[in-house]
Image 1 (spheres, helix red, strand yellow):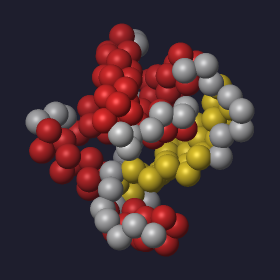
Image 2 (image 1 turned 90 degrees about the vertical axis):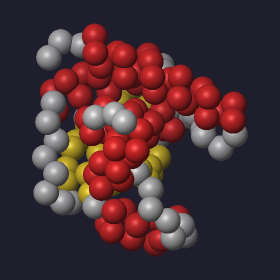
Image 3 (image 1 turned 45 degrees about the vertical axis):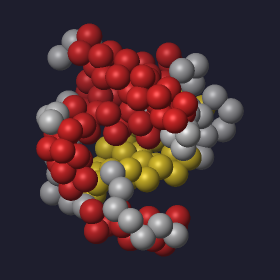
Image 4 (image 1 turned 180 degrees about the horizontal axis):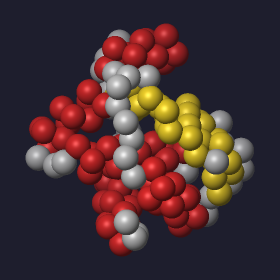
Length: 140
């Protein structure tokens, strides 16, 4: 089960397609979805989480709490819609495309992918791009 909620005034569109897409990503990575929560929030809300739970005093686009057991994905992902908007502008992409990239990024972390080394970053980016393309193949 995948749940979408919001701690700010953000309203997530395309929930049905997103559920299909996220489940497809999990399956392609040889995982199944247990309980996943995507929480859309403000910079301030996510900064507070980053400080209190990770001891990081920085803004970020996503914080992932991974409780995966074996090949069953369980966890919570907090996404700053403020960061998504700023990053989308900086990268010259739509808000929706950047949001999907970050949603896939969090899920990929839960599937065991890192992003600390150049090699890990290149693998993560390639996976993100592939799954953004997958979104485009799904029916609306």
